[in-house]
Image (cartoon, rainbow, N blue to C red; front, side, top):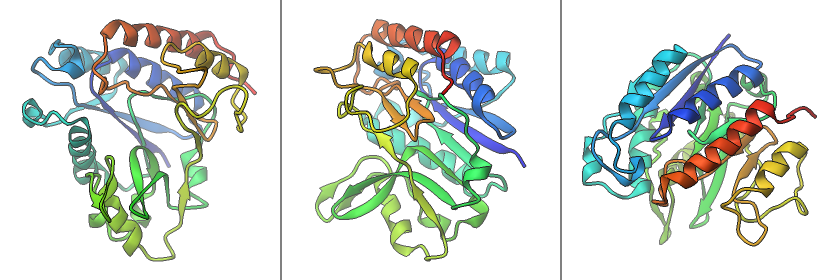
Length: 274
């Protein structure tokens, strides 16, 4: 059996190359890599007012020989909320390409990169859905940037909604409405909460995982760190999250280029073996 790896991309063709090659290096499962091209064809802060990035993403996918699906996003010229844009893309992917898939799905945000061997097929022998949990208003929900599941095992899939929500007066991030699925799911559906090192709450001194030294060194020198705390995140020692790759912060492109170049050095020449 093979899996599908789905990646929404907003602005950085170099991420696609790095992510695809990292998946080839570390995935123990045969996979089909699918890029969902969410770049805007109008000037926008997400593309540093460079609409030509959309075509650059298409060209990169063609060169790599991977599928590229353009996300309908013309409404984003009026919808400026990063969370609402994110929800729209995640729901398009889910409803059009994921919920009825006959093979397991791994969804990776565009700035998440494998740094250790992984097997989604093996993982899904123990559970049906792995997700990053957030809690608002006393209710758990799934964050759509990293998850894997076997959709054929999931019931009540129409209740999975990646929109934000207000739960008991508490406003959620993207994915908030998925709490309805968790509330209604049957006990025989097994879920797994993905453990991770949260941004700006960890560093080399309080790291409680088995992250390899070269990754720690990369995180240590990230220009986005604050007071010695790491901006990047690591999920289950297997996935590195650079964070803010979609430019929801609206910062200068040169900062993104600098961080991308440092990441490329890690993935190309760093010792990622344990």
